[in-house]
Image 1 (cartoon, one colour):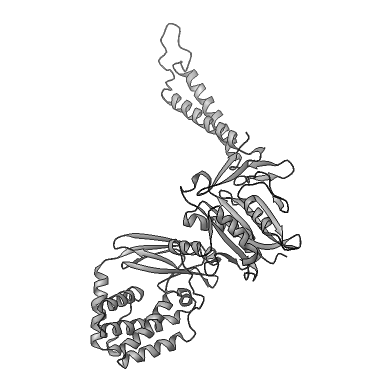
Image 2: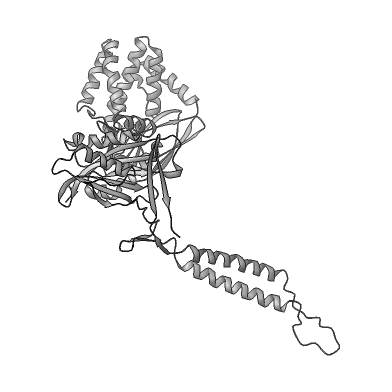
Length: 481
């Protein structure tokens, strides 16, 4: 059984890559990251960096800015969150407004960066609402009306059905909040659609449950935090801005989100080896596409033939299958040159001594969707569609062309034998139907020819190459036909 995890996945976008975009280097693990991972992987990451593949915090910042952030911080939400809120609330009621702000402000901020905790335990919402009310009132009493309006506007968006109780907080607090809430409502509403990839996933917007599965809601303008719960675990937090009269859409793949790791190191943390084997390459491509880079390398350590090794694979972005794959044994400890050679091999250079090449050569592209590889002859078989369509269209074409021929042959002829010396008044008049049938027959015949020409075929495997450039890499493919 493999105990962990690394596969170096280099996904190339080829000619469709965005101009000027570079690559990224990720890590991937099953379970916890090994303590010696940094030491072992550093030479490979350094060599990939020489070829413009960024790693670590650079990728984390880019992904968190463009796509999503962790739904829970490493420190998480304090177990005594509710008690801390009460202490801050007491500072407010005691007239210690500055103390209340210092206590409640960080608590509210921490809560918003741990939306996943609220999705797991919705009862935390009430202490959060209480903290936001007391914070806004403390900001008002201290003279910071701008901060108060920002806090109360957030409160109105996050808790649109809840009011600031007059009996609990006093008439002034009630009127102040109602004025802000009316201003928020006056700005109009926009639509937000949350598309949920995971069946049964539940949607939380600003820590509040909204629906099960894909949903569209109308919201006041502002920025919202979206989390989807799937398999009792939260996705990452997606931040979406809603404009008055506008429509916004966010797609949340919770299964993907639950593997992404951007704190301390950047890459994927899979729960099981089966999940990693099934999804690592596809997830690497998904992450690379999300942030608009041309290539991605995923590096890790796993068991190869019963021994620990660092493994690297070159993956086709189109098919998600391996083009190149090689490993470096970790017993004995590999040299820096050998580790760097693995990175260079993945970038397109010939394999150096000491690399165990599993899929090699100049780089073989995998078969197209639905196809398969003949490993004995190194040929690729492609299956594009159900084979019966070509025969159906061929039959229709023959029938149509035959019918058109009969109609053309009869057109203008007498239906019966005329009396000698008399003109036949009962003749076939098939035009223009005969020409319509003929045209249809020719069209269907053309379709049939196309289906036969593009159906299952066996041909030599395609050969791919990758060459480093100033801004990443150039990928090419040669075909035999």
